Amino acid sequence: MSRLCGQKAGRRDRWFLRVLAVVFAATRWEECFAMASERPVGSEPGDSVSVDRLLIKVFTPEGTQIKTLVSEVSLPGLEGRLGILRGHAPLVAPLSCGLLRYKRQGKWVPVVLRGGFMSVKGDVVTILTNDAERGPEIPLVEEAKLQLEQYTQKLEQCSSRIERMAAVDAVRLASARLQAAMLLAKAK
Image 1 (cartoon, rainbow, N blue to C red):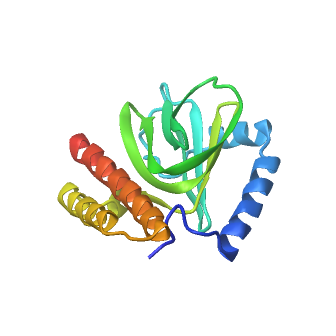
Image 2 (spheres, helix red, strand yellow):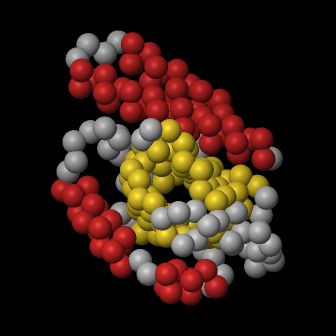
């Protein structure tokens, strides 16, 4: 099982933060503009790009998870949700565990994030996260509800502060999975 959001950072996470700093420092507008003209990863050959003019890139320690053009993005910030549209001011912000949603071809696509950082520069949103679950990795609604109930019960039974912090992170992750599952079920 992967590390939860609030647990102590290990060697892999310190490496990931170093990579994060390098990626943000190396991002240049010209590169991003050139990548925006390429056919996005995960896009269908017949997709039109009518209003999708915001490039979103999601990186994990395993590599690039998502690189596609979208019209809007909603992210789980530490102090609430962050909404990004085309022409947004430059921004760097930490992310919490939660649901990333982006609108592509007029439909909302959910992705469950496990914390990380995001930046907006030009019309490019770059997200670095420990893990990203999307599509088939997201459980069905019934399974997600059961997970949320189990983690909520574990939270109620916690005796120490450390156990409680880990349980709260597990509940946040289960809640994000349930939200993503409900969004996917609604889209069908």
